Amino acid sequence: MNNMAAEVKSALGVLLGLRLSLSSYSGLKVFGFGQTQPRGDGMIAKYSLHVQCPWRLVRNERLICGSSDRFLREDGSYSDDDDWDPFDGNLLDVILMRLFENVRTVRTRMPLENKTGDLVVTGVVEVDDFGGFTLRLSPDYALSVFPAGSTGEHWRLFKPGIETSHFVVEA
Image 1 (cartoon, rainbow, N blue to C red):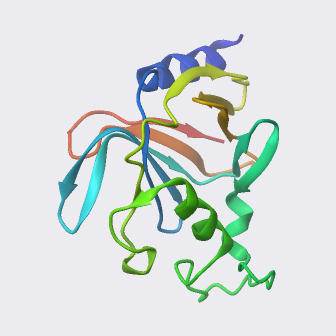
Image 2: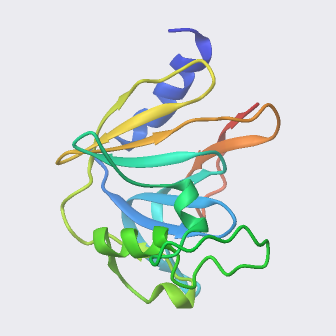
């Protein structure tokens, strides 16, 4: 494992034992890990993972959803229109609503909150030299993030609401 992979694995190690607790979308995908608390009109988790590169959620080697699903509707129609409202019934939200018990509806642009004991981080695996990784989640899920661009920020991990440095992976 080279230096980048080792740094990524170390940074993500803080998530071990924490529940994937929040999911929201605002131009980038936000995953929250750990205990949640109210903040403003929404919720925050102990750690926030902001993903701007492709990602996917797998269960038992079957693709459940991924970053491209935000451009599809449940009826199979597609839109790549920049003005398209990502909270208006896209396939990604439909799938995630089945996994998370939402605090408020998706249409209010609030995050979905996982109040079950499922989706706890059990391992950081498949870390690569480009900042890609897979988080194993109990009982049988995996969240993979894979940088696929030659410029810009791919993802960052930080504690929201606390003035600490962010772990940022860029091209």
